[in-house]
Amino acid sequence: MRNYSRTPFVHKMETDVQSLDPRNRDILVSINGKLVPRAEARISVFDSVVQGGDAVWEGLRVYRGRIAAFAAHLQRLQNSAKALAFASIPSSDEIRKVVFATLEANGMTDQTHIRLTLSRGEKITSGMNPRLNQSGCTLIVLAEWKPPVYADSGIEVITSSIRRNTTQCLDSKIHHNNLLNNILAAIEANVAGVASAVMLDINGFISETNDTNIFLVRDGKLLTPLADSCLPGLTRQMVLDIALEHHVIAIEKNLSLTELYTADEAFTSGTMGELTPVLKADGRVIGSGRRGPVTERFQELHRQHAYQHGEALPFWSNQ
Image 1 (cartoon, rainbow, N blue to C red):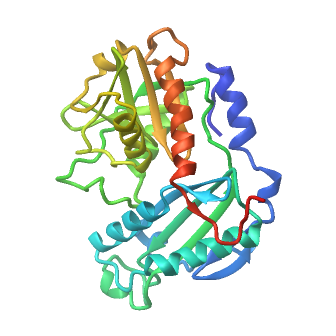
Image 2: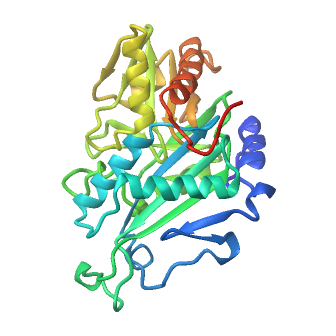
């Protein structure tokens, strides 16, 4: 568990959210369409995700009977699998049925996060070459009771020494399971006693944090890094869409650490944590050191947008 001793409000959040929720002890997990109890949820040691992190994934959030940006998440999952030359990629309808069945079996309609994983599948023998994969993909649907993992009040971050992938090495638009550089950055955040780590691109510009995209606020405008060396997140896109709808200027550009340190406000965006204020970066207080008015407004607008544009669960009725 991360050490948040320097930020007590986050430490309380972490204790509440990231420790085991008793409701998750007996959840059912779907593996290739078969629902099994958590304690029995296993895949083969020959599966590609075990052998080499050869898999793609999505994080989904359920809001009062609706899955936010469900179609877009499924499209990104399939696009990532196609970029990695997976064979027999399941269709959106096939995945939808499994996700809906998993949520219904667990009685989940709100405050739920889904980890959707699609691996290249099981190999006939240990090895790296995809030619050894001859049985099709493995689909895992892991749904848990989990509210946003970061506190609305805000977090502190540091800058990681680990650079985000460049497209010359591994395109970040492939939402893959090989997350070691992000994990190394998270370790640095743990050692520093903060919630997250800002990762720079190979040229020294801000890319994203180890687990979220990032926005700055200056003079009422939103600034966010170009999606060159970061994942163009779907929550990030929601923020851009909301800004357009509400006539807030949003600019995608190269951003330096100095611009983060001197921003009026800063916040992160992601499915797991929604929108989270950044109060301090590398010891520099951001703005007033409290959640700013633009961040607070966009937190509320995002939750409304995620619900209003979400895909309804076919088994749930809000009566």
